[in-house]
Length: 284
Image 1 (cartoon, rainbow, N blue to C red):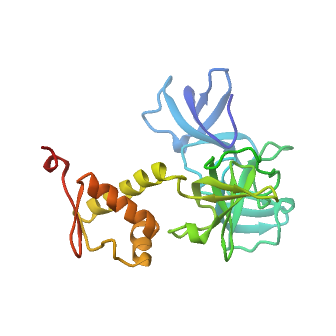
Image 2 (cartoon, helix red, strand yellow):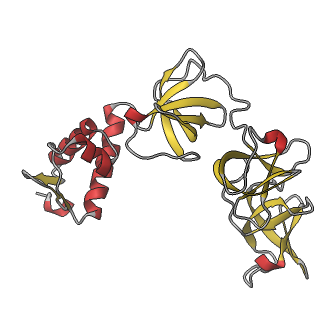
Image 3 (cartoon, rainbow, N blue to C red):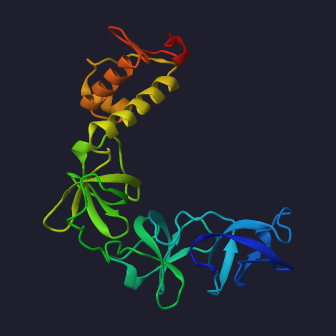
């Protein structure tokens, strides 16, 4: 089956002056226009393409890379507005339309807008919608603490970031738990900390519990050390703000990770520095 709005591995089946036809195992075919055809695309070869609608609403394949596929949330720039709707730049030759019925407010050329890419139920065309919260449901109350979600930032507030999680739940990621800058459309794996009475969830970026959080923090600490040549001018006495800026973690987590690495004889700690010790130097 050839799916509109998605990447697929399709086989080159026929050469024409317009391009090559690529198809699936069920006999379905779609044209890959000649401007995207390369000498390596010989008959029988499988290639990865993206399928969408051309200017005449016919399914067509491309090797161009869209900024989002069907089902994804992203921020796109408005290129044009006309009586049909607004048109967004999503990285392909044909712009992505957002019909007026899918807009929450009038749009202007040049502005960036948060949208979800989807297939229109009536026409089958790939379109965009600003109604990213449509169809959300309450978070099940029986989900365990630490349950994992895949979230996209859909709103920035003074207390944190609201997320659409697993394409159906709403969650809040609080500023006090985040040590990086997040923007609309950013995607993160998050973990459940509390299911609220309103059916939404509070989530965090860190896996709950010492056993999960500390190995991740030690890996981060080692990566930063290696990137800086093995030595950093930070210690357990470094101010929390500096720790958060450099390592994207709390001072408490940093100290635990520091202790774990010291106990494992992976680092040396002096008054002003921490220094990476190569593994072969630790062997007895």
